[in-house]
Length: 92
Image 1 (tube, rainbow, N blue to C red):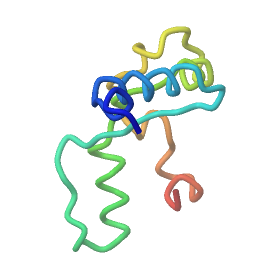
Image 2: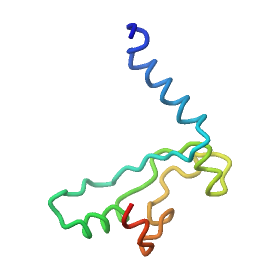
Image 3: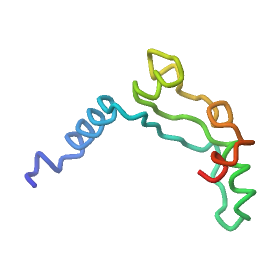
Image 4: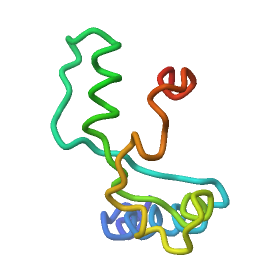
């Protein structure tokens, strides 16, 4: 790999291009506060829904939720996007 290819700015550009152009819905969640991994799994899941939010989404994800601009999803709480009562979401 050349120095240009391993340059952080180049890698960021490549990541951003892949993220934006993917036909798959891609998103990145972050937490308001860390969650201790020593907590029981069910408590960690509960806190993930409470503290998690959508930090980034691509156009395919925005379209999936009826938006044209992914920035309109930024900051959405995970419990607004994924029902905490759905066992599939809890397992995920």
